[in-house]
Length: 398
Image (cartoon, rainbow, N blue to C red; front, side, top):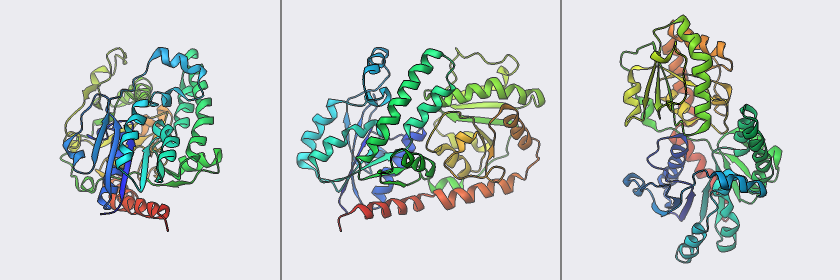
């Protein structure tokens, strides 16, 4: 058994039901598969540890929630730390580590995301471990796109202030780590432009091998679908744009098309076009999404705000689906428009791309095979595990 690795996470990474948890769980599982003895410390966020997670790591929960608080958000105007990150600065974590590190030592400490990065100074003072930041998003890029897309002037101004804080805070934070494992080349390039002193390397997310073996039943070509938690604002923003600007144009030309919404239901307070509301099936969470998608082909990813990569795109392409996405949704993955994905950034193009597939204007079999091949060659679990092994070995004492 190799030396121990400690992961520190903002929430429990299993069940892996969204891109964030899938990315964390996949990374932890990869290190376990490489033979490391794995410990995990994470904020509970009102959840319990799943038995499957216990099979790959010893998990220690800290009873912390990080929901938004209006008063704290206002107080944050006078802080140098961006609000979205400041919520995770908790003495409870330091108190736990004070006891834990007295009886446990680690070769590596891997911290998930800038939200938990604040603990790096404490760890440096208490351990000789190599300390790594796993950046699944470059947070400043998400905030930049958020404020630019915001129409409410008050929220736009507050978000702009937060972006300016992140612009100063996040690149300096990343420099404190022995390495930053970025999730995409795009994020690495943008980070190094802001701080050339960061030891940034790219380790992509991976998809599980069994997805490549999924098969489709008789496909309902008039079904399209959206997957994503609508509690995450970029998903909600993108879906509302699609429902208001794109879907009416699709239904006007092909009224048989129906949109299935998975992950979480669209809240009733959002009013959709009267002409399209009967074409929307608000499904929400399902236990086995792949069973639900066995007769569906076309996925939409209408993101207008984002950073990192969309793990759901990797999974959907590996599972034999066709994805229509904005450039922001597809960024960082390296896909080619009209070869293994369809890209559309305005409502007319987005609608026409979907109608082109529905109207059998492309060779679906060839397109799906090309997409699967690309994902397998670049994002299979074995390939990413090999990259993790290589980068960790570079940090080991010689």
